[in-house]
Image (tube, rainbow, N blue to C red):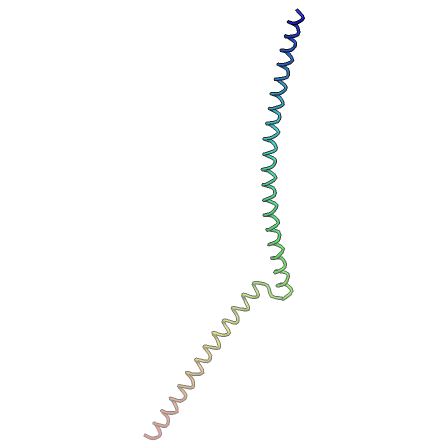
Length: 120
């Protein structure tokens, strides 16, 4: 009778022990999966942080360039306008030079015609 009670108690202890072991294994599996998710999330955040730092670096460089341009006195629009004005000035000078050559040529031709006219 005592042996039977002992066997029953031992079996119940074994059952409880196995349930606890399975419960702990399930908890361990859950914690391992959670750790993997956390690791993945940390890697994603690290990559995002790196990207944001690179973008911040680029933005800071752009700000410095714009500050230097501002100190220099000409904005982009002014620079474009100034370049366009220089281009138009060169076109005008080229056209003016052509006109002067044409006037000179016509003056020479007129002189030649006058001399030919006088000789007739």
